[in-house]
Structures are given as C-alpha cells and as structure tokens.
Length: 255
Ligand code: BG6
Image (cartoon, rainbow, N blue to C red; front, side):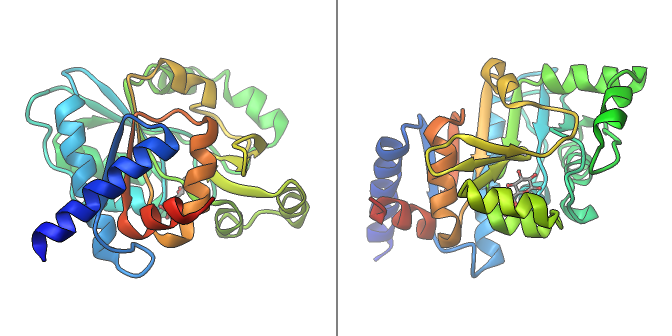
C-alpha cells in the first residue's frame, strides 16, 4: 500500500514535468483545498529544496498568500548557508496582514535565523503616488535588493478568487472576466494561454526580473488551482513546482 502511494506520486511528478515543462517537480499526497496539513507538507518540500540551493549571502524574495504562510510556518535554518536575507517580492497587494509578503518574509527570517528587510507601500497605488514613491531613497534601496534576489518563492492563485480576496473594483473585475483571466501570480493576472491580461500597480518585482533569478520556486496545490497552475506555466518562469496530488491529477486529466 505504502509503496504503491510512493510509486503513484512519482508517476504524477513525471507526468507534470512533461506536461508543464518544468525541471523539478514535487507532488505531496492529498488536496490542500480540503486540508491545511497538505500546505504544510508542500511547505516542508519547499524548505528542503531551499536548503539544497541557497548559498551564503543569498537574497530570497517571497510573495504573500496562505500557501507561503504555511512555508514560513515550517521554515528552519538553511544549514549550508549563512547570512541570507528575506525580502517581500512586491508591495502589499490587498492581503490580510498574516498573508502579506512582508509578514511572511519577517516570519521566514525569524524561523531561518536570517535577516529581513521590508517594503512599505500603500495599496493600491495611484499613478502619481507610484511615480513619487519609486524616487524615495529608502524604497530605491530595498527595490535594488528585491530585483537582485537570487531566489524567489511564490504562490499562484485562481484569478477571480484572488481578485475577490483583494476587494478589486467592479471595473477591474469586469476586465478580468472579459479577458478570461485564469491565474494570478506576483500581482499579474494571466489567461489560459499564459498571456498577462491585467497587472496590479505596486512596486517591487516585475515579471521581467524573474529572468535573472537563479531559482524561481513555485508552491501551489489544491484541485481548485489546477487550471491556474497550467496557465502560469504556459509562459511563467519556474525552476521548481511543489504541488499536491489533487492538483497534479486534475492537471493531467485536463486536455
Ligand atoms: C498572494 C500572492 O498573496 O497569494 C499571489 O500575491 C498568490 O501572487 C496568492 O497568487 C496565493 O494565495 P494562496 O492563499 O492561495 O496561497
């Protein structure tokens, strides 16, 4: 029975690697839509991968969300490295405080015995405030750290679920529906083909910045996120997907 389960997961991992064209995949048992512990298991897989790839003096950028909050809960010191720094990937994008990237970066650094720097920006940002804020010396300094991060840890959300959670205006909700947004990551909304259809205005990491990152680590699971995960992986950069059995099975079922 136990061996059977292990075999099952490695078959799913292989299937997902081929279908989404990603170098590294870990599939944990269960469905994180139903059970919180499944997110913790994805979190543990994420921490073990981080331990392998983090070098001394690395900067690790993190996004918000309940999945990243679970990663933070199971974070431990990254033994092979020291002097690492956690930063939020982007300015707060409408999340509750416990699910904000700032909170998660601070928690991760505490558990990992590393350092952290935070990014304080009002949310949402008007064009005029945006233009002013990016000229503040303290903001320029942290933005440099974020853009030069070595590793990024991020979640993926279902587009409309995220938009509602962020109390998005009805005008933008309309745009997301018209353009058939399917997934969301880093404050960008993507359609089924992986094209960006909308972007939340905030400072921090832009999609282009991912190109120079050594590792982009994606953590997203739950049957309800299958379509969203597929959409992000159409164009989005990722070196590692950590997901769960329910999402993986659904992705392989989708045509
Ligand atoms: C948000 C991130 O905080 O969390 C999003 O900004 C991400 O990019 C989302 O899609 C995922 O949330 P959760 O709770 O499903 O892990």
